[in-house]
Length: 147
Image (cartoon, rainbow, N blue to C red; front, top):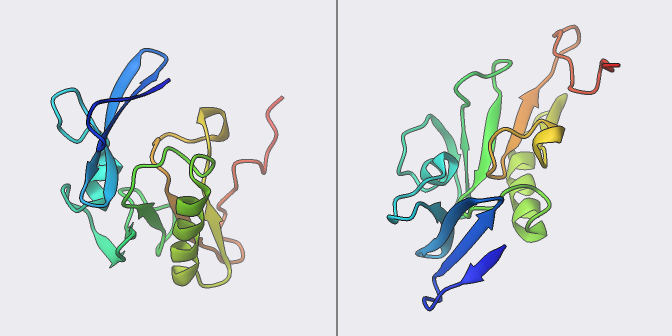
């Protein structure tokens, strides 16, 4: 459930009892805790509050090297605005995917997930750019079926 407050730059969200506050920082919405601190690590990274290995920066997104890249050249493209996943804001999702495509060199995968059952573990939209090579041994999540 989303509640708008008296402040036009603030929105309170309740997701099954987990309350967060979305606060507008300049032109970007970020997730904050009750005390106003930024509580989404990807918001902190995308807005250059938390350190990361930045590969590229745009006005609307950043590309970083993940902590545990699955192959050399693996990067994450993260929008500066807080969007939970690719389904929440099609415009931000499209621009983030376009930024990822700027970095992509075939053969590669561009991967994003929406929801925990779809393997999403960080609830801030991000697109993985994963370089591929014949015989790299990297399996996609749906390669093997679990019965």
